[in-house]
Amino acid sequence: MKIYTLTQRSILLLMLFVAFVACKEDKESQNEESTEEVAENTEEIPEYTGDLPLDRLNFPDGFSIDVYAENIEGARSMAMGADGTLFVGTRNEGKVYALKDTDGDYRADETYTIASDLEQPNGVAFKDGALYVAAVSRMFKYSDIESQLNNPQQPELIYDDYPTEFHHGWKYIAFGPDDKLYVPVGAPCNICDSATVDKRYASITRMDPDGSNREIVAHGVRNTVGFTWHPDTDELWFTDNGRDMMGDDVPPGELNKLTEVGQHFGYPFCHGGTVKDPEYGDQRPCSDFVPPVQPLGAHVAALGVKFGKGPMFPDSYTGQAFLAEHGSWNRSSKVGYRVTLVKLENGEAVSYEPFIDGWLDEESQEAFGRPVDLLFLEDGSLLISDDEGDAIYRVTYKG
Image (cartoon, rainbow, N blue to C red):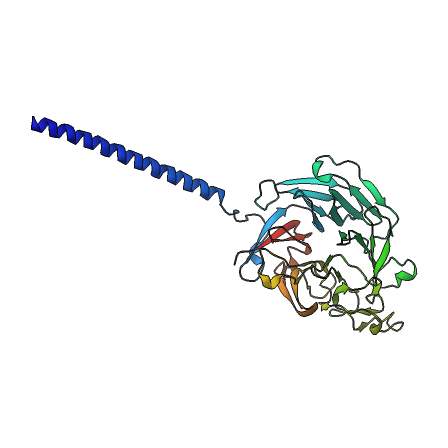
């Protein structure tokens, strides 16, 4: 009788033990599944496996570069819409694109063609739900564009009476802190006093969004294809490309700032603040004009410019000027093809140095990319457009 009772109790204990073990294993299995689910949700963006040789690029420690979008033929100026649509202009391709990152992985997964067969629609700007596109002599407005990417309505014509020359006719455009639309007009030549024909040549103009109240804010600007406003002072800062056919190392390109409406920056009389033009320099001395904040390398063709900001990049980059150098086309050995950094103190330049290079193979003189425009995203990462590699890159910092 005692043996039977002991066996029954043992069986009962054994059953309880088995149930406990099974319950524990089930909880561990659930925990493992939960951990795997979290890991999937926080998985980093897969390594880029496309054809662009990103491993050739050089940048400071802590930074990395990836491809935000590729196969964007002739990608040049960029503007961000209110709903996260990235608009991209082109030059020779005649197209304007809209890119969407629908899953939030910082890679565009939808591409739309907003317009085609336009004349050098380099310039794009976004304001109050509308996309503005500059095409040499005309400006178009696509209202409520982000709700009709598949089938945009016919755009409104803002103006069609700007100069028609294709030489330096492609434009960078942007809205300033004064809600005015800024539109440059390049010189229709390598070197000429074109302002005697039309004061708008070699200038930066601005106007109301409907095209009214136009005025010239800066003179003597040969060809700017990038400008922005200082985050503290609201001053207009812009790049300007120097003239050709004066040699490999002359004249310098320019990074300028406008402190008063109507200032003159030297073209065609003086270049880089100090270089007298051989054809027009005797007419006016360099002292008559506003010198650049920073003379740049000759023929580097600096285009886009933006000031560094948070929250991603280190504080030491905040308020510093990033430049996209498109690169030379007629120099005996190529220069540019990089993103540079002009460091500033109290509004004055203290250094000018590479930030990212490697698009150009200096030995073979072949380039797989030519940076055009820059744009900081809300998370603080930096987009770079490239019309040679037909891509848009994203630069991040992880420390």
